[in-house]
Length: 310
Length: 281
Image (tube, rainbow over all chains, first blue to last red; front, side, top):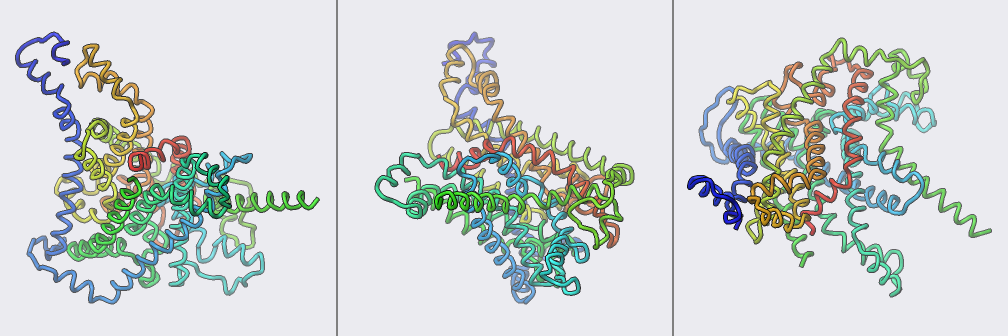
C-alpha cells in the first residue's frame, strides 16, 4: 500500500521498493545479519568443538584423524576427572543454593521503603555489577595467607590464635568453601533483583484478597506470592546455574584449581588441557561434559515456564 | 511500653540485617579503596589495624600504575574494544530485535527463544574452536580477536533486550508513518529508532559493560601485555613472579570497577525488565 502512496521513480526502483515493503521479506533481511553472525561464530564453533572431541587433534599435531569416543573413554577412566566433575556439581549447587537463600532474604529486606533504601540497594548490587575478575582479585587479597584481613579480625577478636590462622586458599576444604562463597556472593545480588522484580509484579489486590480470606504471613508468602513469581525465579535460576556451571574465572583467579586439584571444575580443566597443554581434543571432550547438564536445565526451565503461562 | 520495646527490637534487628548485607557486599570494595591508597609500609605490617590508614594516604600506587605499567594502554584497549563491539551489536541486534518483535506466529517466537538460548552457550565450550578460528584469521594475540568474538554474546543479549522493548511499542506508530507515505523501512529509520532511544541507550550501556566484564575469551586469546583489555591486565599482569603488587592491583581494579558500578545502578530497572519481560509476558 505504500507503493501506491509513493511516487514511483522507475521500474527497477519500484521492484526494489516493493520487496522492502513486504513485511516478511524485510523481516528476514533484518534478522539475517544477527542470525549469520551467531551461526558463524557460535553454531560453527560448537560443531567444531564436537568434532575436536572425537578426533586426535592437538596443537602439535593438527590432524583431523577420527578416533571415535576414545577421548571420552580416557577421560572418564581418569580418577582426577571424576573429582573435577564432583567439584563442579558441588561448586554450582552449593553456591546457587546459598545465593538463593541470601537473595530471598535480601529481597525481603528491600521490599518495604525505609530511609536510605536507594543507597543500600546501590551497594548491594555491587558484587554483581563489578567485573568478577576484579572482585575475585580483591577476594584473593582478603584471603592472603599472611595479610588476610579476615584472619586479622579473627585474631583481634581472640577467636583464633595467630599461629593457627587458617590458610584459606591453601587448604583443600577451605579453598572449596572460598570459591563457593565468592561465587554465591557474586550471584545473590542478581537473585535479590530477580525476587524483587517478581514480588513487585504480583498485583496488590491478590495479596489483599488472600489477607481478607485469612491467609497469614507464611501462607501469603509460600502459597500465593512464591507460585506467582516462579517463572521469573526460573529465568534467574537458568542464568545462575548455567553461568556458574561453566564458569572459569573465579576458580582460575582464586585458587588456580588447587591445592592439588581440590577446586578444579570442568571449565577450568578444559582450559588447562585444551589451551595450556595444547591437547585440544581432550580439552574439547572435557568441556562437552558440561553440555548434558546445560541441556537438562534449560529444557526443564523452558517447559516449566510454558506450563505456568497457560 | 511493651509495644515500644517490641518496635525498637524489630527496628534494631531490621537495620542489623540490612547492615549485615551491606557489609557483606560492599566490604571487598571498601578493601580495594583502602588498599589502593595505603603506603606499602602500612599495608604489609600485621601489627597495624588494617581497616584504616595508620600512615598518611598516598597516590604512589596510582602513579606507579600509570607510569610503570601499561595500565593506560589497557584502558585505551578496553575503550576501543567496547566501542567497536557496541557498533557491531547495534547494527545487527537493532533490526533483528525489531523484526522478531513484529514477527507474528510460532516461527518468530521460536527464533526469539533460539537467540536467547545462544546467549546461554558458554564461552568455556567455544573457546577451543574459536581460538583456532582466531588464529586462522591471523588475529591471535591481538585485541581485534575480542572485537570479533564479543558480539557472539552481546548480539543475542541485545536482540533479546530490544525485542522486549519493541514488543511494548504500539504498531500503530509505524502504520501512521506508512499512511503518511513512508516505506516500511523508512518508518523503521524515521519513527521507530528515534522513539526507542532510551532502549538503545540501555543496550549500548550493557553491551559496553559486558565487554568490560568478560574474562575467559581475553584470557584465552591474548598473552602479550600491550594487547590486553583492562580486566585481564589488572588481574594477570601486575604479578611479577610470585610477588603481588597489591596496592597497584587494587588501584587498577578500583578504576575499572567504578564506571561499571555506576552504569549498572543507573540502568538496573531497564535491565531487569529486559531480561525477564521478553520471557514472561
